[in-house]
Image 1 (cartoon, rainbow, N blue to C red):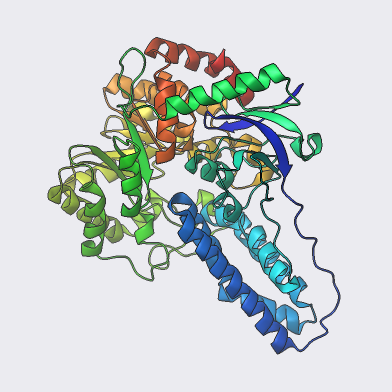
Image 2 (image 1 turned 180 degrees about the vertical axis):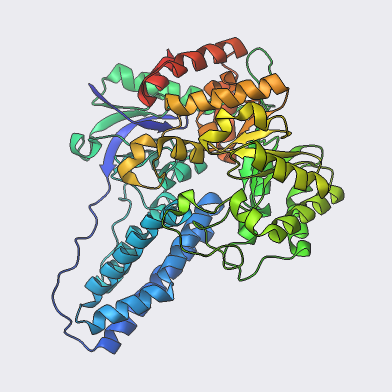
Length: 548
């Protein structure tokens, strides 16, 4: 037996033979255009429409987080700027396949350079380009292999369209060579409760179709050619973990009875029923961007009040934490800030953008106060990208002025951790967004595959910043939540509690795994695991130290 390691997603384990994703289509040739431009332009237009329709159909069937990702991909296939670029390339003599391929490559390069939200969408452009070229060639786009027997899927990475529509009766686990814990592949695998390991270096060369492996997401390992005893043990462990995950829903707690409320991250009211069904004790992150993105003007106070009320009324007597609009140069909105910036990830975004357009912020806070008055939910409101005491004072003061009962800050940049004691002098609570906190701590764009290894919330530098916030919250007697993807990692969830987190928020499908893992440790044991992880010298060492 040999073992490969990566970043595990979830707690699942599976033993089966592997199937590898087929290689992507080869790049088109430079053969010059041999047909009339207008006819080829219409052919590309038809291919784009067919791809968009297919992606929208997959989105409707998938639902949840996957639906949003696929609908975004469908919009990429309908972007008129792409079609205009294709026509210009056709007129320059490129054939239809080459023109389409290069147009998407140029678009991808542009979005990647913008960073942040736009770079997140850029990661899906390659798949759209592959599907368009496949239509033009009259061949099937590379996709998940078909099998009569259950299998473990091995891939360089998976496009959202493939991940979202996996047959979970046949696909027992997923292993990718690329990607990190916050990649679309990891997020969608988690949303499907599919055991996965991402970032497994060398896995494509190490395996061939039909080879037997054991995938252990909790351990982050792929065991190649295991013996019969190991396979039997893995099958038993799989049943044990499935039983734990399907146990009756209880409140989040440690083995010694310490309460750790488990909340859900939601994007709109349509995400609420699933969160309630899976046992969310409230909402730890309600993203309000869905009301703003794609709009030509800011929604009215009345429109916002109705949307917020629809979410809050589903959680009477329970906590609902709302993040005000997280937008700016990396999520350009014509009515907020669409000015070009050389480095938008470090530009006018989050609270900075809202302060520059304060009326938009005032309208949103007013609508939230209206929803608070109309429901029995325990509303908490926070601002993104808070950096220090001054920004905290500004936002908390404005929120209180407009009638909000609990106003806090989202910790996403290192400065807020260093100054956490000052922030807690003003804020009612702090919620840690580990995705951005990791990105800014490591100076590594979380959507760039070239630095994916750095985008790991297990990094000791990130954990030490979390500790600073946890200690400051404890000293102030105020709550500290974690609402980034790190909270959905069961092993890391234990460490976060040991560092001072008083509640955790995650994708609703991760609640069962995290709930089960927390019940295996006491608070003292969680603190001991956290202390060992803090002393590590790498993310891998931190994982190993916390598990020992």
